[in-house]
Length: 146
Image 1 (cartoon, helix red, strand yellow):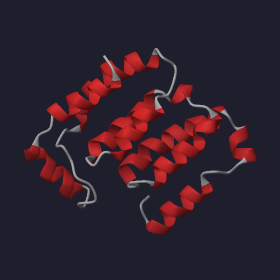
Image 2: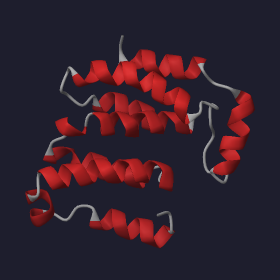
Image 3: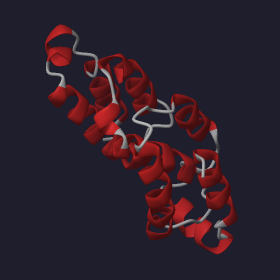
Image 4: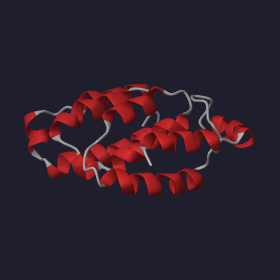
């Protein structure tokens, strides 16, 4: 069971009838497969439990998800990082910052905010030595996306 299998299951679960209302709810900023949160969460559980055993963040998986068109893929990536946040390193902060400002909207920012917050809380020297999230905060304020 690989993380790639999760993406295939997500694709197989798509529901075009739900996709339209989901798209409208997000003000037509993104396209959707039509897989609601409860269904996605069920899929995540089995894959993320296995992923945690590796104790390594699969950034290729995250990048693949972020590059895909449908919004559910970004939810997969953000929730994967949330599940794996105890394995993040200080050197991952620029990658997280890039995710926050790419395809940015309140839904993924809310998840990534907690991921970044947990990393900075655990490694407080990151905030003292390098306030990397200030450009992200400024971006979100300027675009009124948060």
